[in-house]
Amino acid sequence: MQLSDSTHAEITLLCKQGDDLVSAGNLEEGKNKYVAALRLLPENHREWEAATWIYVAIGDVHFQMKNYDKAFKCFFNAVQCPEGLGNPYIHLRLGQLYYEQDNHEKAADELTRAYMGAGIAIFMEDDPKYLEFLETKIVI
Image (tube, rainbow, N blue to C red):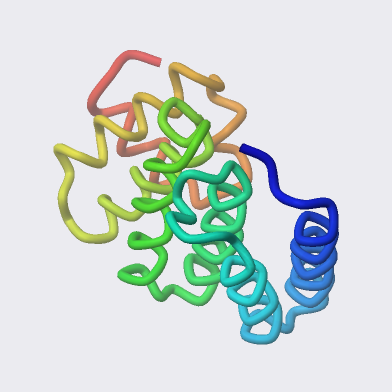
């Protein structure tokens, strides 16, 4: 299944605008652009690869805003979309969010998936507490 060229172009434009707004520190406005892009997907939107990355973008905004419950829902959706399961970045965020929910068993599982898929480098841009936690669970 492929999106029409016009729908794909509109989603791409909205996501680019969202990226620019988020980069400029306008998190709420950026998130609104991503949500608008998600709404352009046809029914059963989780079947579309674009949904994976849109959920990741929305989830990242919520993560930055420390809205961990909303971020978790976004990444939980993303992992169920095409190319979501096995994506190290999605597993990293899920692990971090499980950690923030004090669900350390699931946090360790997801963070291990991220580490196995992308190595230690994937942890370098975030709070070191997540890598420190993982080091108590597996040998790195």
